[in-house]
Image (cartoon, rainbow, N blue to C red):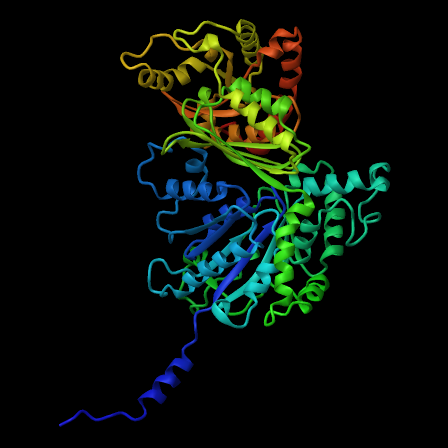
Length: 616
């Protein structure tokens, strides 16, 4: 007897399938000009995501994707159970524990801007793979964040995500978030607007045209026009805070519908950027602690505003079915970098930098007027095998962070993006290669002292720093000795030399404690009041390096381990500053400037402490 046939099975199946809501992938685009803080915002989102399964698609103009490497490194640090490799790294110290959070999925698109056609196809393929992953699998995601390169016109990506057919149908564009560097925008408007530049106290909004200001690059203007959310970042770098109201008014002239948030270091709550909300599980079904750890994606976009007039007018000219406008847009996407004169140049070398030569390059050779953005990883001899992440943006704003020891063969990788001529690229290449070459007298061991003037000046600077009771002078030989002896033992097979290289004496190492000036000890601040001295010193390092003053020495961090474990700051004394007879006066003025920044760090971090045991 044959099995009965269900003649209604096909109809029933179609009905059930129709009642099943297909998975819609919400997408947020993070765009913004070079150095505005896009990767910083993405890193903040990935640390605040709680239970969300977020995928990040990161685009970079350079030959290697520094941002992806940084995100992967931070992910490795957060998920590592062994702290030995990165125990002193800033990533390990400042990143919250994400061991119980869903794993991040990071995808790499580099070598060009995302509005170019060949990367568009790769982007579509990555999104399709995200949509094809079953929701119950570990690799499934709840949200996709696309970080564009700084020179990408987001209009092409918006058009792709708004398609009503094909592979992109189930990708829903929730919002376009545009990062704006308040410091750079302020400088560009002031420098290119005589009425503002020549009139002290004049407001920007009274003089700046709404949409055709000559100081704003076309790509940056399109990024602002396309935004649903504008983040006015780095507001702490604008000295006159009254100008921020004028900058916001100027942005509203370009895009009156966008929401505008002011931030420093892209510090913003997750729901301000992503379309997420607390899940509605009924009254009494969730504790307050659980609600802070859970997010749910919204069914419809609440962040996205109506398209601006500029975007709408361009969209009406686009015929996605005929492809006529698409071909023209492809041509525009290939030529917009040429028309704006922007190119990328990558420097790579397996030999370590000599810190004094690297400092000389940044002080005297670095073409700040031509380079808009620079980022990568540095391998520096004096930092004893530490992996240093470099970021330069805006007006010579340097950011240097210790990312732990090298997990693979060490080597420098730095990309420079800007309006660089062939001569400037050649000059950068030659100068950085020379910065990796040791002098002839430094090639043998034990080393002679080719820079007696530098080491002598460094000793006088240490004495000057020791007079400041808020500072503690550290012994560079005690910090670097164990690490350098291990390196020298590997380089000179056999027993490690007993003496250290003489260039160690050209380093000045110290740390900010603020303790003696407050009448207590550093241990008292650390143990009784829970003051993080490492965070205090990282804050000072960032303020010094972000000041953008040409010729000033950059501060680096060095981990030390002994009775106490922590971070010290260091800088190198150049022989040029010591030999010209003005070295002491130069560093005296430099140190006065550092102490002013130290005052602001102490005021921000220690002024609230009640040091007396009676509570007063």
